[in-house]
Length: 369
Ligand SMILES: Cc1cc2nc3c(=O)[nH]c(=O)nc-3n(C[C@H](O)[C@H](O)[C@H](O)COP(=O)(O)OP(=O)(O)OC[C@H]3O[C@@H](n4cnc5c(N)ncnc54)[C@H](O)[C@@H]3O)c2cc1C
Image (cartoon, helix red, strand yellow):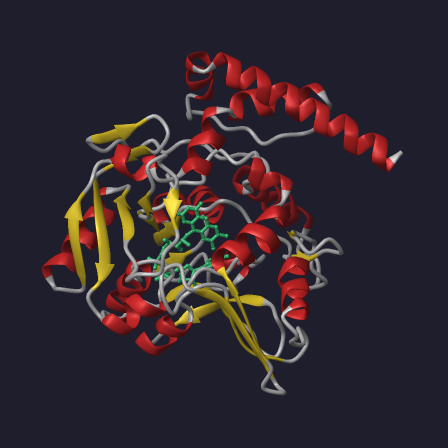
């Protein structure tokens, strides 16, 4: 995966010696069958809980890490880091993402100690292909975005590692990170430390460069004004921002205001945690029993109620995909997610979504012409 001129990660054919022709063909077929730009298929495992916008589950909780340092370092409740640390302590290394000073980039890494897990805690709103790590397909534990969870499961089938994921609104451009760092008066080419959130919930974007210049921006400002608006097109037509193909998935469980919108006041982080598989359920139950996580059950409806973007995206996706197809754009296949059924319940919003997509495509073509 290589970051292109627009700041997004794209797959390229590497310059390693080309394998034999039949192997190339097999690799290309496997890539096409698993790349989330081609296909994301709904999970065939069904748990006892179900919601049309969140999928199926074996359990759902409101949770946080009992280790205060992990909770503070984590993006919300630090639950993914706490689970990773528990697995690492048991001898199972994990693939995840981390900062890569002195650059402003985020890179995939292999976590073998609790300290490394702590250093990789927190959301990174920038392109990174954790699946591009050489050991991603063979390490016992994988942490990554829902699209990576889907690709990994499709590529490895029954041999899939234990997959931990998080709700995902989409990946912003690397250029957005660099512009924000410059705007805050620091040098994106000489980064000493860079975090997108943390030190509170949601905490702040904070960068320090090699000359000791420190820049800080609130979550509203960093995500809302700089990073979020550069989310790539593929993410805007994503069927699975809620990690249906993971074993365990976490999200923010914000408090809401009277109109149901999240309140971003700093306070100790709380995650929603969903077990998507039986082995995911066993991991969460073990973490609770061993005192690694504090958790209480919630419903899937309570979790999605606080995720306006995820709700809207899946509810109107059928219309927006239709609009994209009408303009001749290629879109991924999404079998099994019941998008037509959801659209039939919300015909007007889907019609508006289709029209809006057509209009935006025509406008951007006119600009490019
Ligand atoms: C791009 C992006 C979009 C998000 N959108 C939403 C959303 O719409 N709704 C919502 O509720 N939550 C969203 N989150 C997730 C949320 O910010 C938290 O990650 C989630 O609540 C889990 O928190 P935690 O404290 O348990 O995780 P932590 O303990 O902080 O662990 C997070 C793990 O994810 C890994 N990671 C971080 N960034 C990336 C990345 N870009 N690619 C791959 N791995 C990464 C970290 O290395 C770490 O292992 C998003 C996160 C990202 C990175």
